[in-house]
Image 1 (cartoon, rainbow, N blue to C red):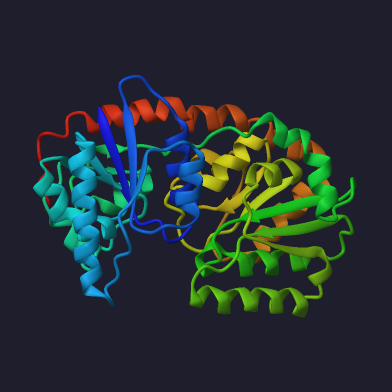
Image 2: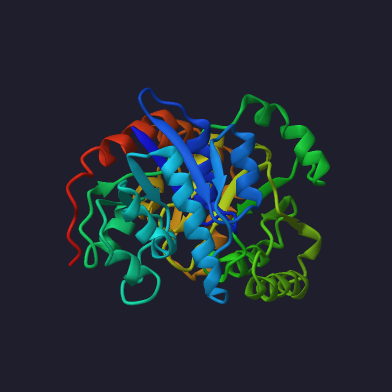
Length: 374
């Protein structure tokens, strides 16, 4: 199968990490290529992974002519690559590139990494185009998308295990970031967006000031204007709670496996459902107990209210419940070990890269029969 992954590439987060993992993964009879509209961090990491990558050029609504240039460039890429299937990783990509894909004779597919807004542009426009198959990245996304599109199935994206060097660097990473051997390090690594619950995370740890041996690391930096305002508010919150000396804003990081290995707890108290959650699986691989909210793609895999598996789930928006869960984990190394030790086997079961790439190919294989959009 000749498979071409198509994506925007202007930001960096979970979807981008999935694409890098796919580029790093090999499977028999699957030839992968990649095409991006924007040249940025994702492009750099794909090139570093040895991917066959083409940059087709920026496309912006504010510059309508840019669509024409990008479509012409993509047409040339498709002519050279002759893919069997073009797999778009967002509706926006299909809204821009759909006519070119159809004109090339390649089959078109969409992997939904978020529930689509079927009545809004670009999602509604993309879903009303001819598509040979549509996949979702989790049962949650599949259920949310069901009223708008007929799905071929859902598939958790691949997430790789950390390299052995990440665990070996634990002491050095902690030392570089100012954590002592006795500190319990709580980590959140996510986009700087309000729904990721970073403000609620700060409110939760503000309830733990009587405990002397925890620190919080927040990995991530603003990528868009509205995120800068939110990020400034996070710093102000830490100061107003009197915990600025225990919170480290780490900015953009390319060493997430090392941060996971250096931390003791992973906490991401989302306000809205997480469609999947790459960082949650990375925490499992690292053997770190998780605190998150009871909604989204992986919540039931992590825990139920009655039975914790690899972490603790709490109601969304309840910073007191987050604080209670964190307090229990900060105070008990045994609880951290009990929950965290189950993580690597679960991560392998859910998201082993080689297996997930084979499953992706199997889901795409019957794509010759078009799907109807309701």
